[in-house]
Every structure is written in structure tokens, then in C-alpha cells.
Image (cartoon, rainbow, N blue to C red):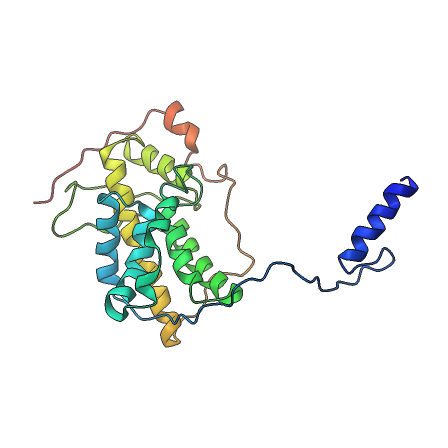
Amino acid sequence: MTRSIENKVHETLSQLGSSTGSHKKKSVTLETVFPENPAWQPQVVDPGRGERMAYDGCIGGYGCCYAAFYSIIGQMAEKYGAPYKDFPFHSMKAGRSGVGGWESTCGALTGAAFAYGLFYEKKEHNELVRELFQWHDVTALPVYRPAVNCKLDVDIPTSISGNVLCTTSKARWAYVSGFPVKSKECSERCARLTADVARKAIEILNAKIDGTFVPTVDKNAKMQCDLSTDSTQDDAGSVILVKQPEFRSVKAG
């Protein structure tokens, strides 16, 4: 290191409140003034109504993230008004199909996580998110089927996603069901799954509010990305490379 570069390094570290001879963590003064957290309070909402709202949001073209978020905060807005009604709900459309169609984290899970974030700080927020995400990863979904006004009133196969990624979730469902990812059956599946996520997210939130929530997921749990350990589930490539089983949809009687 030349003397001029070394001097610059020392100067930078000095500005950050550090020194080259110490690893002790020191506070840094931020130039940006961030707003204080708004005094929003979580309210108990109806999981049954929430799942229907989430389903309607999906089939109505609002997207899974918006639908899940609105199923929670929208109910509070309808019942309590401000500040809930003043949230710019349209911003949640950005989370559709794994954020902007990028198929990363499931939009329904993202919407629910954002809803939790309006009320809880890091430790508690992480607990709620872990509980919801782990449930999603190990549960055969979708379960929900609208009793009335169902856009595609047929049996929809279930599958276990294994992780929170939109692309993996859809691919595994396509492999199990035999339907292509780009099909009306897959769209229906995602709308129903969003309803399931909304119900579970609300049940977790309500338990947190009334003091009965007990975390069941280890705080060190991480998303499972290794798909090779499960011989019954294949990754996205399997949807193309492996012949899919045939599933015959049946209308409700």
C-alpha cells in the first residue's frame, strides 16, 4: 500500500469513527434523518373473510402480494379507518409473481410479511415471518376452494413447495399436477394458495395480538434451497425433462 493510499484509508476510517489499531465497534452518525415509526397498532381481523378477500384480489388482477396484504390491512381499514385506510395499497402490486414477475419470493408471503412489518420490529417480525414461511414450505397447498363465485370451479391438486420461491413452488406443482405453469389451472392454484396464506397469516397475527402466539420454528432456520434430497419432488427443470402425470380436473357437484 502506498503512503497516499494509506493516508486515504486512515482518513476514511477516521471519518467513520474507527481507528486502524482497534476493532472496537463505534457508532456512526448518519447524515440522513429517518422518520420515527408510525404509531400503528395491530387489530384482530377475520381469517375467513381474509381468505376470500385474498382470492378475490388475485382473480381480480391485483396480484398475490397485494391480495394477501389487503386481506389483512384492508380489513383494518374497513373497520377502523385511518391510519390503515391511508396506506398506498397500490404499491403492493409490485410484489406480484415473486416481485415484478421475477418469480423470487412468493408474492403472497411477501404481502403478509409486509403487513407484519407495519406493527413489529425485527425480533418479533422475524418470529412471525418464520412461522408463516415454514408452514408454507411443509404444507400441501392449496386447501381453499371458494364455496361460491369460484373462477375455475374444479379440483386443484396440492403440492408441497419445499421453499418460498415462486418459481420452485409453481414448478413442483406443475410436476405433481401435470398442468403447465402457464395454464388457467395454475392461475387458479395460485389464487387459492394466496387465500391459504392469508388465512394462516391472520391466524398467526391474531394469536400474537391476544398473547397466545408461541413460536414453533427455530430462530436459526433458513430457507431450504437444496432440492436433491427429496426424490419425490424435482426442480424446475423436471417440469420440462420429465413426463408429467395426467390429472383430470373435476367440477364440484
